[in-house]
Every structure is written in structure tokens, then in C-alpha cells.
Length: 357
Ligand code: NAD
Image (cartoon, rainbow, N blue to C red; front, side, top):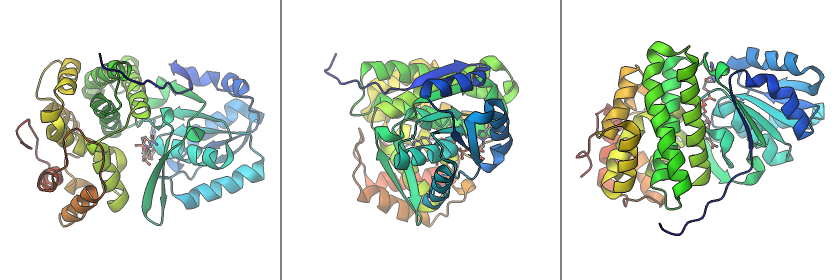
């Protein structure tokens, strides 16, 4: 075994079914009795239910969280925080709602309790990505790490199957890249393998079992483990590509991860034998890039960047952006291969182990 460093991150997690009932008690533990509740517009009713549940402990609700955490929305929310005299933030929703909660914490140091309803994984990380004038920047600081997280399986039943599958593959990407991160370690590797296995079993099963608590529970558990992997290690080529595609072209987050992941795995596979073996164990066999592609295809979610609005002429621009900023990756970045990867992901090709040799 090699020397390694493992840094655990302080967060209290409640996991299960019906756990949302514990919200009041968890807020008391945080010493909060006047929180602002934040969410995205489509989850307005979820926020209203929580407001009713916690009564006087909710000072107000802000429902305009948006993807990629635009700073102008954060400014509006901060004005509300001041106006309400809030002493904490509760976020319910996906990475967009949680991103806004983190942005508020970054400016105010208020404690956060977040309730994730997708599989994106932001809730466990000290990472915040923010967008200003079309430019997305990311930083790591413990100031944005939520103090408490309530995972309630029941809140995920309403996530449409397509969105669930792409969000679940987004989660799987965190675990995959943690396995070959420069700062990986045996603890994270265990969580990554278990996370991939749980997601690999549950995501295809959602097609006929979206209301099955056991399947939903396994998907949420896998996404939690994968989120810890994201929080604990430095991500590589896959996240770099998705960050660039999302930031430069405003492509949708989970779908972009879903399309790119099989290609990033096929690209890195020759240089990460141990990680490939771990993923094979988790999936019960080889052809791992194709297996992930097939989950997406069979679930009817986009498998090509063309389908999510990227223009073919942007392949060159994104290649240049990716090559212009060096990033730790187990296989050196080769401009010709990155261009080929983007062209293949754009057209929706099913990659295999020989695609990027
Ligand atoms: P999202 O939060 O934008 O949610 C997608 C849509 O699904 C929204 O309309 C939302 O209201 C809806 N939704 C969420 N849960 C639902 C449910 N249970 N039922 C019905 N509808 C539901 O998308 P996302 O993929 O969860 O998050 C993407 C954002 O999160 C991006 O901005 C990304 O950068 C960020 N992110 C950050 C980190 C980090 O560590 N900082 C990690 C992952 C993602």
C-alpha cells in the first residue's frame, strides 16, 4: 500500500425514507430558528411544504435558484437574507438550489442544511462554481460545505426517469475519476467502487421501477458515496471537459456528463488499469465505457452533444480551451485525440477500449 492522505469533511448526514420529518430537529441542532429556504422555480411546491412543516423557523422562501449559480441571482438572494435577518439556509433541490445555498454561505458564513433531490452530489463538497458574465469559475473552500444533509428517498420519486439516469451517471463520473485521481486513497476507492456498483444496479432498473423505494434508495445511496469521492479527490479529464462544455457553451450539466463519461473512460483506460479493474468488479464485467453508454441509450437520454445543442463548429474551440489550461490527468492530453473524443461525443458514437488508442 502506498502512503496516502485522507481528509474527512465534517457534515452530518441523515439518510433514509421519511427523513425530511427530522428537519425541525436538525435545525435546532444547528441553532437555527429563522432560516431562508431556497429552491428552483419548478420545486416551488416542495419549498412551500417545508415552510409549512417548520412554521416559524422559516423566515422566508427564495425560489429563483438557477443552474451554474449566476452571481446576479446570488445578489438578489443575499438581499433577501439581510431583509429577513436569516440565521441559516435550507436548500431543497438539485445542484442549482444547493449551489445558491453555498453562494449565500460564502458571503455570510451562515450554516446550511441541504436536502438533495437529484444525484448531482454538490451537497457533500466544499466546491462552488459560479457564473458571472458567462464565465464559470470554481473554488474550493470549507466555507461552502453544508453542515447538515438530509437525504430522503421519498423526495426523489418525482425526478423523471431520464433526468434521474443522467443525474445518476453524473454521480458515477465522480466515483470513476476518484479511482484514478492523483490524490486517491484506499478509503475513497472503497466508496467509489461501492458507489459505482449501486448506481450501475439501480439506474437501468429505474425504467420500470421509478417508484420502487429499494431502487430509488440504492440510486441515492450510490450518489451519496460518489459525492464523497468528488469532495475528497481532484477530478481529471472528464470533469475538465464537462466544465469547459458547460461554461463555454452553456450545455446542460447532467446530460453533458452522461454523454462525455464513456469517452473519458475509454480515453483514460490504457493508463489506469487498477481503476478499470475496480469498475469492472463494480459492473460485473468488461466493456465498461460501452455499458455506461448503453444505460443512457436504453433510457432514452441524449448520447450525443449534438442532441443537447452543441454545434459541430464548436469542437475546435472546446479542444483549444481544454488544451490551453493544463489539468492533472492520468493520460497526457493529446490535442488530436481530444478533438477526436469531442467529435465522437458530438456525433454519439459508442466508444470501446480501442477508440482512443
Ligand atoms: P438542477 O439542480 O438544475 O435540477 C434540474 C431540474 O430538476 C431543475 O428544474 C429542478 O428543479 C428539477 N428537480 C430536481 N429534483 C427534482 C425532483 N426530485 N423532482 C422533480 N424535479 C426535480 O440540476 P443538477 O444536475 O442537480 O445540478 C446541476 C448544477 O449543480 C450545476 O450548476 C452544477 O455545476 C452544480 N453541481 C455542483 C457540484 C459541486 O460540488 N459544487 C456538484 C455537482 C453539481
